[in-house]
Length: 93
Image (cartoon, rainbow, N blue to C red; front, side, top):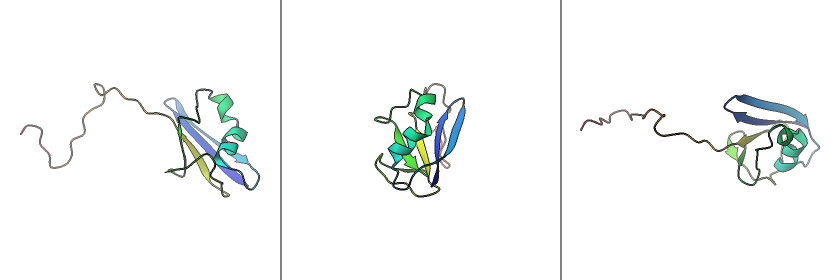
């Protein structure tokens, strides 16, 4: 069956389509994709994993057409991120 494996970094996104046997789980698909060799910083013990935007465990069995997503930690310096103003709120009060 064909599935996709996606990973994104600030420099760009990688999306691989691979053929895996039936009864393949998330971890097996990630390992078979070769993405861990391309991005050795990926740590499956700490990074969250999802299928089409919903978190999944490494032992989740895949279905044909699934897209496995590897989510890296997002870090942002609060001093460099503009504040979001919620509609209707006024900070000057």
